[in-house]
Image 1 (tube, rainbow, N blue to C red):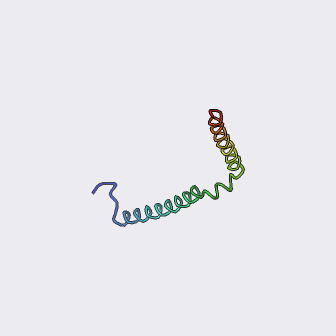
Image 2: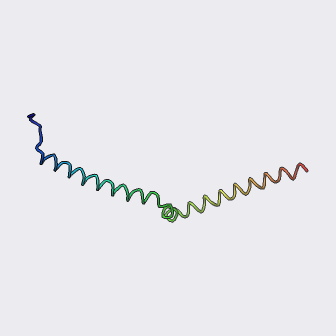
Image 3: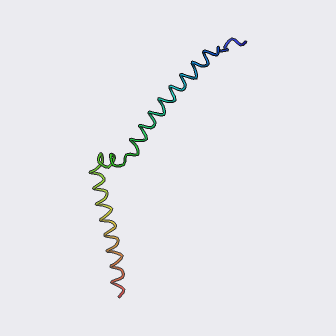
Length: 76
């Protein structure tokens, strides 16, 4: 037997420790995913920036439509 050989009990303990660590890691990952995919929470957290962005987008889209409509009116 090699000098670094482990007993069956040591192997079982190692497997159990790995299972505990994996369970903890999966639980932590699940919580992190829940936080990152909570778009409502992110929207509330960044409400001011969202409102500003929506206003700018509306202004740009509205101005683009108005400018596009103005091109057709000029050609008539």
